[in-house]
Amino acid sequence: MNSIKSAVWGWFKQKAIPEESLAHALSLACDGSENQPSQLQWRTLTELLLTWGAALLIGAGLVFFIAANWQNMGRFERFALLESSLVIVVAIYILLRYRAWKNGDRLGFGYTSANAALLAVSIIIGSLLALVGQTYQTGADPWQLFALWALFALPIAWLAGSELLWLLQALLLNLTVVLYYQTFPSLFGSLFLFELALGPLFILNLLLHLGSLLLSGKLGCLAGNRSLNKRFDAPILQQLTIAISVLCITLLAVEAIFDEQSRYWLVVYFGLFATGYWLYNFALKQIFVLAIGGFSLVAVFNSLLTRLMFETSEPVGLFLVLGLTIIGSTTWLTIWLRSRHQIFQDEGAHND
Image 1 (tube, one colour):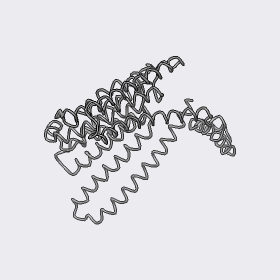
Image 2: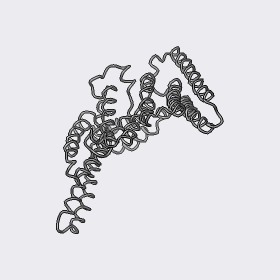
Image 3: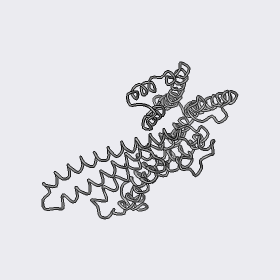
Image 4: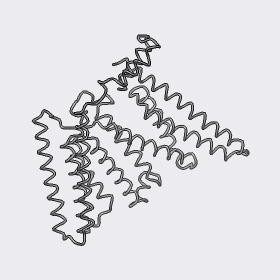
């Protein structure tokens, strides 16, 4: 529906639609019967939501069932329950995938019923790893559990090509980094030359974001490979990872303003900001990344003003300047983002 509205607005800009007919044309674009989902589409969506919800609840239910009945179940019963559940879910996946293959779904990527079974498989594998560590007291650190879980879940996410499984993969990797830092804070700090875990989280999520963009074909390097692009097409993952990455580098840049020993993060920040401005404003044209990057720059700039304010002999007067700067910068950024969003829409309507 947004593309139709953009096309109507583009026609209005080209004076193909008179001003007095613009409101009626936009209402037709919004309320046209062709834009309303059919009964079959609603049924398909409901079935997929129920299927994926059931897979998630089954996997979580097995974990909580074993935890709640730990004293009443022996070692054999715990492993038998999880392993038999794993075999059953794998058999269900094979059956559902075979039916989809017969119906013409050759790739099988996305939010399909078969991939919902793979979500349950990923959760059961994680619970099996936790059960092994808890039963035999292997002495492994918590980060190793999530690292192994991510390793075993990687081929499953690759097979499914579903965004939810890629999100699970990113979550496991982030938990691995955080737990590793909590286990070895001194070693982690000496390797990456900082004391907080923000640096590795910034690097990890930036690599995940760029890797997803590259493999999905949005950067153009691997565009054209339909099977590969659809397998790694995960727009929500791309937005979440870049948001976490920008948050981490923003906090590191703000810390660098008040700590002279971390000034190199300011160099990394402004280098990343300049590269991101070119990439997302001219190449990819993503208003979401421009928005979070712009407000990040506002936060860093006003943090610099805050430090200068406390170093001057008249900090009271600079409070007014700081307040006006915050209001002015956010207002200007909002106006600029609206103009860029309109330009992106017009260019999209013109290309359509």
